[in-house]
Amino acid sequence: MDDIYISRALERVAMIEQQHVDNLAEKIRDLGGHPTKLGDVLAPVLGQVLGKATAAAGPERLLWLDIQLEEKAMKDYKDFLVKAGGEKEMFNILWNNLIDEDLHTAWFTNKLRELKEIGLIH
Image (cartoon, rainbow, N blue to C red; front, side, top):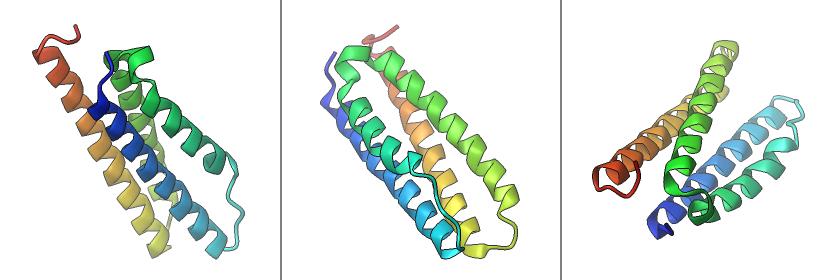
């Protein structure tokens, strides 16, 4: 099944995820740290691959994988929030990212349910 809506949504989510990486990297540099390059390399590639993989993987498997990735990201953000301490700007970035991940998870879950209800997946 080639679903243009799911593909476009995944591309949009990938852009938001890249913004998360960029915002965190900028804040880490502002605090005198050195962000890893992994996020700068992995996020755009992963987003492009996932955005184009709907037909190959099938929507059910793809959406399930996305839900798992978002839930892992939410756990990581919650852990980072505990460690952010009194750094207000980092705290706000982490909260905003956490909320985005929660919204992504809700969208993926809703789309999965919708496809099941109309019989396109089992």
